[in-house]
Length: 150
Image (cartoon, rainbow, N blue to C red; front, top):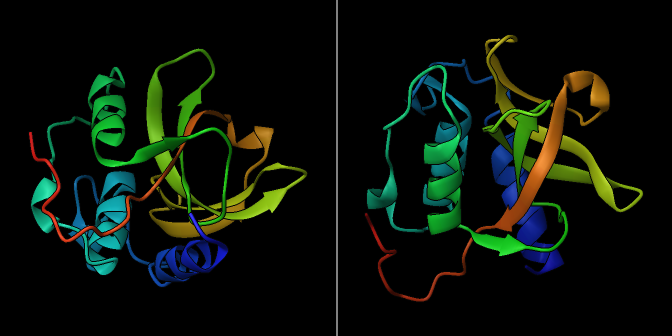
């Protein structure tokens, strides 16, 4: 991902700050962490038919991991505008956010739909959040083809 594209994605993600949190929401009236990724996806001009809401409030992480692995491109390290898949403690991945700032080669801050704050926020990514990075991704480039839908 180029630095320019990373800044564009971060700018788009930040445009959702303050949007209310709503489980499985997919509009500016309310969204969850997957909804934020989806709306940024659409704002980038990618195929909107890839959305899915096959997950509950409490998840074992399989749906989220499979969806992110299917739609995004896995990368070796964090990049602004990239996506971080996160877990809490030793649990399965339960959350995703868009990396907005790097710090010492790692994730410095993320834009994400924060269920407890009940809105989309940008906040420092610190151990106090109780989340740990599981994997890093980036949005695919637009190639003029429809994304694979399963």
